[in-house]
Length: 280
Image (cartoon, rainbow, N blue to C red; front, side, top):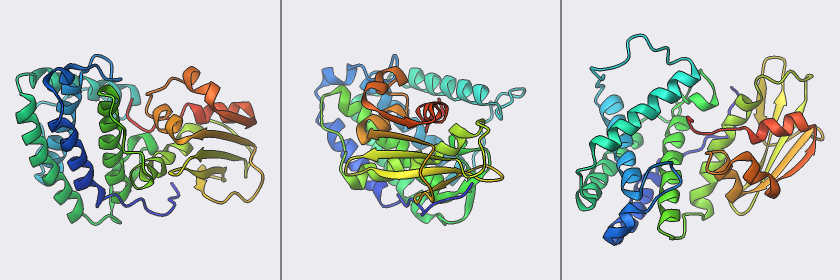
């Protein structure tokens, strides 16, 4: 894959976690049970999930720990298998951790948040790391994997904020890196479309944190660009709020369509709406 300028998010991890803890520590007991957009999960469940993400990264990547119980015959190179396996693990974790009180959960999240921030800060962000599966199967730069982890935490914090009717972290410094990371799913969304060389698909996200990106068909694959050399064959325009929710399945395509501008080739434009920037 061709990469644009690096999305460096290391410095955002400590501040994002502080904002989350400030929110959670102020919640009255009854709001921990509020439902979130994540099916079947309350605020408490979603916070437990964030803790599980932290522990998984610290254990596997910092400490080199390999789980003793992993599926022996499951082909995780298949997208459906990977999604099902991750969803099952996430659900098992959340159910097993139900005895953790909100106070203790916040204490754990403070500890793991500090460890996560230290871990990512110590990495060479420009080295080659693990794949970011929704962007493609190949190893990705560490900065993209780090940014993916930032988006995971940012998105779930917004889900919690929505559930307790608190404003989100929508300023440009928070949201722009999320959108700049999500756009790396665009070539993957178009990968099965057979188009002539130089076919161009443009995504325009309006708002303070938005931007304009293009996917251009090359002789080998679709390549990202911020500067289209020609008028796009398809253009999709949406605001930043619709964009992050659509690309994380917080909105369905049908729910989002009335708020989206579509121009040009309808097949290409429709593929942009199918873009998914999470494992789901």
